[in-house]
Image 1 (tube, rainbow, N blue to C red):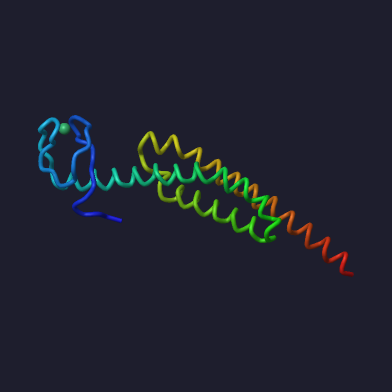
Image 2 (image 1 turned 90 degrees about the vertical axis):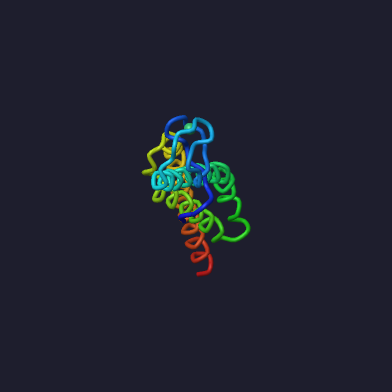
Length: 142
Ligand SMILES: [Zn+2]
C-alpha cells in the first residue's frame, strides 16, 4: 500500500497540495521534513482512497439494491450473492476507513453504514423468500 516517490500531501503551513518528494513548498516556500512528508503523503493517500471507495459504494449501492430482488427471476441464488457483495464492499470500507480522522470520511461513514444495513435487510428478505420457495416446492412435490 505504501508508495514511494509518487503522491501528494497538504503543506502544513499553507494547505496547498505539494509533491511527496519536494523539499520545499512551491507555494509558500516552507521547508519540508522528509519524514513528515512521507507520513502526510500516506495519510493523504488513505484519505483519497477512503473517499473514492465511499463514492463507489454510493454510486453502486442503490443499483445493487434494485437488482437484488430483480435477479431472483434469473437465478434463485443471485440475490443472495449480490447482497453478499454489497455487505463485503461496505464492511470492508468500515473496517479500513471508519477510524480515518478526517471530516470528509466521518461524513461518509453513516452513508456507507446505511448501505451495510440495507444490504443486510435485503439479504434477510431474500433468504426468507428462498426458504418460503423451498418449502412450497417441497410440499408440491409430496
Ligand atoms: Zn506551503
